[in-house]
Image 1 (cartoon, rainbow, N blue to C red):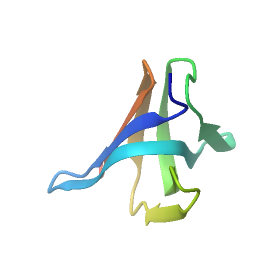
Image 2 (tube, rainbow, N blue to C red):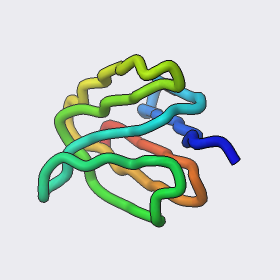
Image 3 (tube, one colour):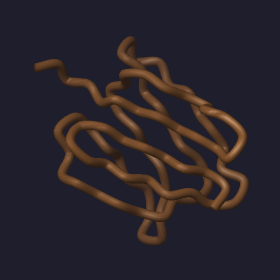
Length: 83
């Protein structure tokens, strides 16, 4: 098993990111949090930004204009922005 997550970040207009990553970080009402490989099932409303850590350790930031929904399930993370 690889230590990676499948991530898809979507807005109503397009797919902003799709691929394998090492980690996903964001902010919810209780503060900053990280999703790592094999994370428990998790669902949250997010705001501020998404930080994606790719397989090479590089970080990419996506700013969230309003808010979004994040769902982590079975080593996959789906994020829907602009809700």
